[in-house]
Amino acid sequence: MIYSSTRNKDLTASPVRAVLEGIAPDGGLYMADPAGAGLDWRSLLDMDARHMSSAILSALLPGFADMEGLVNASYEGKFETEDLTPLVKTWDRWILELFRGPTSAFKDVALSVLPRLITAAEKAEGSSKDVVILTATSGDTGKAALEGFHDVPGTRIVVFYPYNGTSRVQELQMTTQKGSNVRVCAVRGNFDDAQTGVKRIFSAAKDMDLKGSALSSANSINIGRLAPQVMYYFKAYADLVKDGVIETGSPVRFTVPTGNFGDILAGYIAKLMGLPVERLICASNKNNVLTDFLTTGVYDRRREFYKTTSPSMDILVSSNLERLLWLVSKDEDLVASLMKDLSEKGSYTVGSGMLDKIQKDFGCGFADDEEAERTIGEVFKKTGYLMDPHTAVAWAVSEKHMKESPSPMVVLSTASPFKFPAACLRALGEEPAGDEFLQMERLSVLAGIPAPKALAGLKTAPVLHKDVIDKEEMPDYVFSYVTGAPRKEER
Image (cartoon, helix red, strand yellow):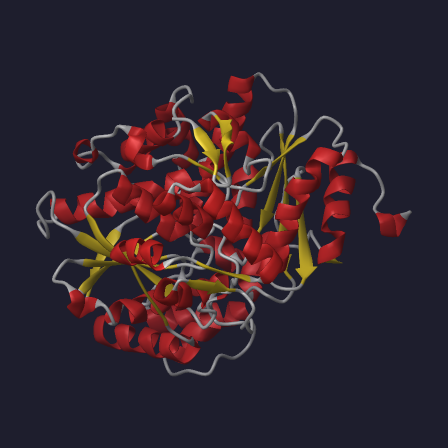
């Protein structure tokens, strides 16, 4: 497969090069048509998670040597469960647990693999350059990326997160990160400010002397981060077949809590590869820019930004939506025009024909903090299952679509409830008291399940990263780290 920029078909890259670069030189995202991957999806259903992952990645990212060995090394000893992403029947639908990895978030599935993809790509390209990973995070990507890249030879990583824009547990997961090759920095502003800043650094990199280093990304703008997420849609489907819930070929629906549109796009890629996905339901919180777009065809980021109890979805610029626009239209000139409108005007509109195509495969909805809290309490009371606020948003939205079809509904669960103990305690009828670690302990008692050791251990971990900067300082911050030159404020 040859990847090309979503904004210019003449800017092409091999899968290996696309993973190394992270983003195309024109600011577009590398993409290829997954329908051309040439994979018989039925052949995956009898595989375990690791073999399934290596088969899918070999199809989407040909050119990497020993993909099976790479995947096995990526996941070995990291996850609580051998099947990586267990499927749990709860009430009248299924929950796909994606938080059983080392940082208790769904990002672990992809970010366990990406570092090894990048080092393998360097080897394949014969490169001796250091690869500097730049990542903006709304909460979970940062820690998962740090966990994957710390002390990996030939790489360095810089993670930017919104100052006071994550949960305290999420922040501590990042700021306590050990590693000789890591930097963590808060940005005054929201996630969109951090994400836009990272994109601008990539655009400016051609004019920066990086002393022999190369930039890449761990966000889902990197196809090497997005591709590993496709596996768990096939895995969920295979589990439903094995459990006798459906027969091979029967349709399944998925509801996905998403802000940057990467997690749900992985499901669309699975569908284009042949998986019988009847419908993908896009679940948003109060920052419901995606719900409005999928309903009206108008994407408008010029709106009030809300801080919610599901902070990983507090996003107004959903980068991976650009890939969907390309996959539906196959018109890079149109995509370039829409992205220009978004950058310069703050909004864009797609035509009715294109919107009809999107709505055929995507449903949508949103739930605010109050509805998410109510959902956590109701599901726990009826089933004993405790979910986090992001999963609760998805569950609440899936409820609105249940009667549309008799096909099974799978709700993606993206984080452990112990990452958001205050919100979960309130949902269970108890006012949170003390710091988040006392809240974790109380939540553990109420729910009858232990908090993940890695989260509980943050209480005594020393804070190693304390930098806070304005968004305009991001390029200089990276340049200083990469080259060793003093920052402007230090000169």
